[in-house]
Image 1 (cartoon, rainbow, N blue to C red):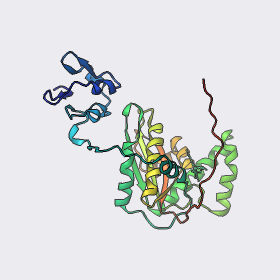
Image 2 (cartoon, rainbow, N blue to C red):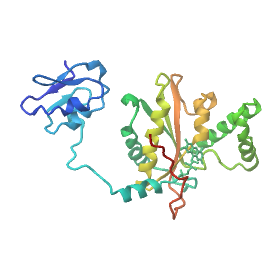
Image 3 (tube, rainbow, N blue to C red):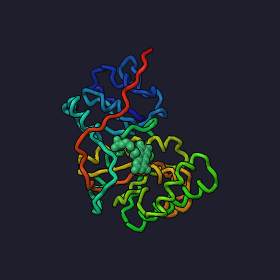
Image 4 (cartoon, rainbow, N blue to C red):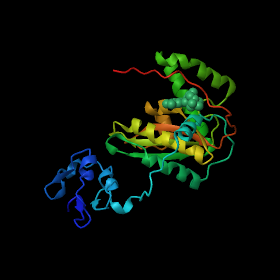
Length: 270
Ligand SMILES: Cc1cc2nc3c(=O)[nH]c(=O)nc-3n(C[C@H](O)[C@H](O)[C@H](O)COP(=O)(O)O)c2cc1C
C-alpha cells in the first residue's frame, strides 16, 4: 500500500504538499503530487495539513486525525509577550495533589512540541507519592555528595547545597512540590534530552493556563542523566530507558506581581 493517497477529484495541483515536504517524500510530477521516497517520511503531517482542498492523505499521519483550523489562532504581540514573560519558575507550592485528570490534560500538550526529525519518543512518569518524592530528593543529594567526595571538579560548587540539606532538611531539590514529571526516552534516541527540553517547556507554559505552576528539577535531572541507579530504581525505569527531563508541578502558593527584567538583548548582524 502506498504512503500517500491523492484524491484526484479534489486536487488542484497547487503543489503546496510537495513544497512543504522536508524529506522529499512528496514531489510534483506531470499529473500532480507523487510519492517519491516513502521511507523518508518523518510523519510530520505537513503535507496533509497544508492542503487547501483536503485532497491528500498520508497513511502515517492520516487526515482523519488532523483538526480543521478555520482561522489561524494569533495572539496579539503584546498578549503573547506578556504571556511568555509572565511564566515564572515556581518554588512555593500548596500541598494539594494535582488530580490525574488535570495532570493528563497538562501532559497532553507535550506531544505537540517540536522534536528532532519528529522523533517524539518520550513518555512520562508522574510521581505524586510523598515517600517517592522525598526519595528523589534524598538520592539526588546522595549522588551530589558522591560527586563532591570523588573530587569531580564541577561538583565542588555544590558542596554547600549538600551541607545545607544535611543541616536544614530543606528540600532544595524538589522544593516540596506535590508532583514531579519525569520524561524518559529509549537509550537509543540520542536526541531524547533535547526533545524533553522542548516538550516540558510546552508543559511549563501551558501549566499557567490551568492554574498550575512548574519548575525545572535540574538537580534531580543531572542525577538521572548520570544514570544513578538508586534514582532509576526508585522511579522503576527499565534498563533500556534514559531519564531525559524532570519538572516539578503543583498549585502555586504565590503570585508574582511584576515581569522581571533580564540581560539586554545582544545581536550581531552579518
Ligand atoms: C535546565 C534548567 C534547570 C533548572 N533547574 C532548577 C532546579 O533544579 N531548581 C530550581 O529551583 N530551579 C531550577 N531552574 C529554574 C531557573 O533557576 C530559572 O529558570 C531562572 O532562575 C529564571 O527564573 P524564571 O524561570 O522564573 O524566569 C532550572 C531552569 C532550567 C532552564
